[in-house]
Image (cartoon, rainbow, N blue to C red; front, side, top):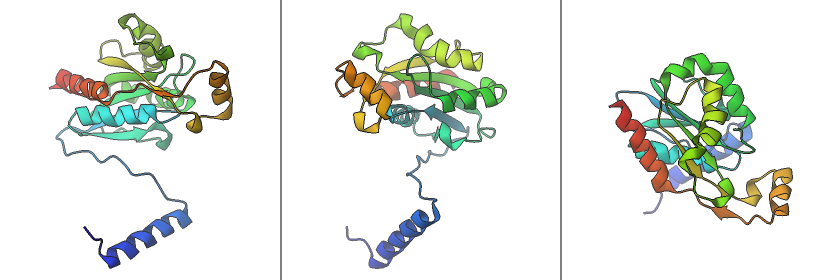
Length: 198
């Protein structure tokens, strides 16, 4: 399909003006209409938690708006919230920790799911690791979480997306780049979350 010349020029101007104003943003994930307002909020270092969050929403039929915690989203109008993040050294990102601490009382009654993305030394995540990967880094911050669906997903390493210190540390362990995050697992978790609410 050939793009209309006028639309092409308008798109280019919009892009240039957005870049010049400093308001250029990545494409957002727009949810499908729903009678209930859902949000998935995540904290990430290299994008794996972002992908997991979008795929979780896809598993829910695309009804949840997906937010990077660095956007400091106002979730007061949302009925249900799913929270997750990438785990490094047993913790989620500082931004996610701060966001949860600041909004704990508002988030707690809306919480319907928790997820974590971690390398886990490239080993399958076992059921007994829930306390280490979900309860400690997320449930403890919220003062809740054990009674909502939770899941830990294997993540990935992409050296070009890492800060220099983290990259050097992992390369020092001869850790190869890998990608063990599975869309189907994230979507299944989204379906599980939704099934518990209906």
